[in-house]
Picture (cartoon, rainbow over the protein chains, first blue to last red):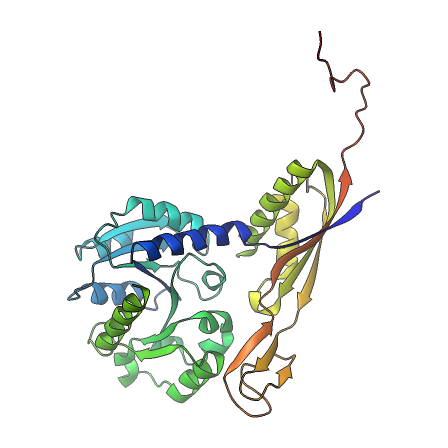
Amino acid sequence: MPRRISIRQSVMAADEKIANRLRRDLKDRGILMVNLIGSPGAGKTTLLESTLAGTDLRSAVIEGDIATSRDAERIARTGTQAVQINTHGGCHLEAHLVEKALEELALDKVDIVFIENVGNLVCPAEFDLGEDYKVAVCSLPEGPDKPLKYPHLFCEAGAVLLTKIDLNKHIPFDRELFWGDVSRLNPNAKKIEISATAGDGMQEWKALLSRWLGEKR
Amino acid sequence: MHELSLVKSIIDLLADHAEKNGWHRVSRVTLRIGRMRQVIPDVMKFSFSVAAEGTALEGAELEIIELPLAGRCRACGYAWEEELFSCPKCGSSDSEITHGMELDIDSVEVEDQDAPKDKHSPICNGGR
């Protein structure tokens, strides 16, 4: 006869354990880790390139993609150390992958580790990588209806960045709808409009990173 | 598409329990999954049936209890069970999600190890 046994355990227990361990280790070393999440083509790598250029903060980057090391190569050209994780079909990064990537980085002189997650608004929101903050990156051409269509990411995000705002001269965008929905989902998220190529909002974004780093130390 | 990696975690976790506790076979697994987890039950069940092959969970039935989104207003205390992210009563967006983020293994049904069929099996062959 089968017997019923109560388990009451989180499905993510194993990975959450790794994530919490990473967060503790990085806290001890005074390193901030930020997990960038957005659609393919939202401008995550371009945002990183602009962030890394002309900043005093010493950074390292973990790039997550299904295939190719193109993003890591782009980051390496800025003079920043970068590790590429290829998920081979996987639609998101997981903590054990980040743990391995961190081992490959020289972290002695690093202030911030950026993780660029696999381009996807759904699955990456589900997985704790040991980061201090998830950051939702949504570009203006994607349209203003995304926050309510993909609520989990926007609920979890410490900051929401609206990128490519320089394209607003060609593409209409209902800002009130977008930011209104973001505020309803997550009134505490920091909201920044950015053009990584023209420079708008970059100071505010870098100031936010400095503040987060200061709070961690 | 994150269902497959969730299923792998479930199987790893329960296979570990099975080994430690000597479960012969798991016949049923019950999960509690909140709406916000964006899990598609049919995809989950299919992934489970494939990934469980060759483990103590092979052939087990996967039951998913879906939990609706529920929230509570931090400003006025009103509680609701709808997909709302701001308070329908006072309009404040300072709300918290009280249900809908669950992703738990609730329980399993197991069959214990069969008694050894071979009476000469070396349960104790010491002293030779």
